[in-house]
Length: 183
Image (cartoon, rainbow, N blue to C red; front, side, top):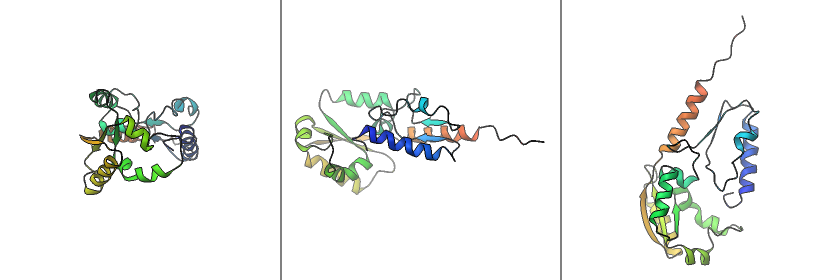
């Protein structure tokens, strides 16, 4: 769904409409991801279920999963600028584990177009965190880099945004007024 923002939006909306009936709150584990979720709060304002989002340290919804992994939108922008115009692809454990399968799927995206990637990108940024350590992640990133003739830059990632956003949603749900009992 990453390559098709309309499909991503429709699937998220479909799932939310199902969940809102029995949920006290919904944490949207997506960032702006191509901007398909921009009107989410407005479109769901009449539902009696608060929405929570992955937010950076400034309270802004994160750009995407890479922003989450790098610790926020400002950190993401800083890493992008550090490339000085060199095209960089960012791999988290999920992306690294499934790039071969996604490359085989028919789509209009250039995410896995070999000639496009070899022409425009030179580096793969390997973003690791406390749960991504291991030989499988290392092997997947190395295979990706070799396939597309890229060098590897290693970066320490963070799970802080995901954890803080989850705690914010949990605390928000737990603070709701209990249902008043009639006397």
